[in-house]
Length: 268
Image (cartoon, rainbow, N blue to C red; front, side, top):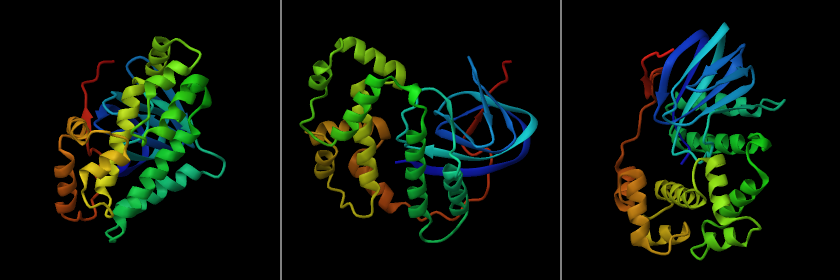
C-alpha cells in the first residue's frame, strides 16, 4: 500500500510530451511555474505546488521559463482523488521534505531502504489527503468518507443502514459520493479493506493466515475476500503473500525518467 516504485528529478525543463502512467504520479514543483494540460482542462502550478495525477490520465507539462521538480510514482495508493488536482505545500515545506527523503532513499542500497520507502509512501499519502482543499468535497461526502474509514475493519459494519440513517435520499448520496470521489460508497469501502489486506500480507509480521487477515479487514467470509482480492490484485491472498516472501531483494535502481511512462500521440 502506497508503494513508491519510482522517484526522479527534472532539471530545467520546458515541455514534457503527452503521456500517462499506470500508477499515481505525484509532482512537486521545486522551481518556477507551468501548466499541466489534460484532455478537458488545464492545471497551473508554481513552486511549492504538488500535482496529484491518477493512473491512466493523459497529460503534458509546459512551462514558459522552465520548471524543476521531483516526481514520484505511487502504486496501490490510498488516495481517493478522482480527478487531477494541485495541492499547495505549507510554509515549512513539509511535503518537500518527504519528496526529498524519498528521492535519497530510492537510490540507496541500504538494507532498510524498503522499510523507509514504505514509510515515506504512507506519510506522503497522509499529507496529500490532509492538505486536500476542503472545498473539493461537500460536507456530507466528507462525513460519509470519515465514517467508512473509522468503521471499515468491523465485519458487522452496515454501510447501507448508515447511509439510510442520514437525512438525505439514499440514491442522491450514492450519486453525490461517486461524483466527488469517483466511486460509490460501497466500492470505497471494499477498496479500503482490500488495500489494508494487501498491506498486512506484505508485512514482515504477518504469518499468511488469510482467514485472520480477512476478518481484521472487515470481511465476514474468507472465500468472498479471496475472490475480491484476486480480482483487484491478480493473485489470491495466499499466492500474493508467498510472492512477496519469495521476491529477491532489489538492488538500488538507476535513474530512468521514462519508467512506467506511456507516451501518447500528440493530439493538440
